[in-house]
Length: 70
Image (cartoon, rainbow, N blue to C red; front, side, top):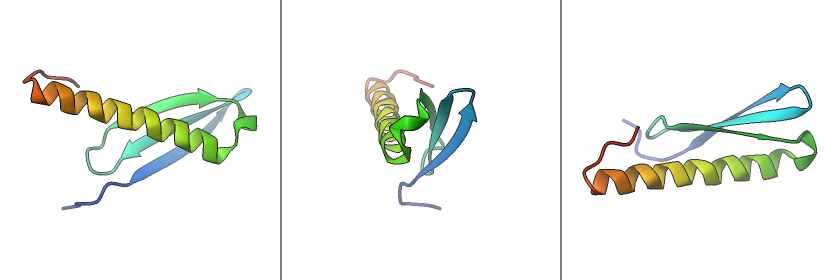
């Protein structure tokens, strides 16, 4: 069982944009963002990681309230 959180990033060029998927290895939660290639890999990864953290926080808040958030 894995106890440490890591984020796996996947980059896919779609026309004039780059789709970045970020997957949390601990929960298997996945989010995607789209941005311009000129933004650079580090900035796109940072944005995807922030979105993933937001989604995980929303899920945790829903779980604390007893709700089900997918």
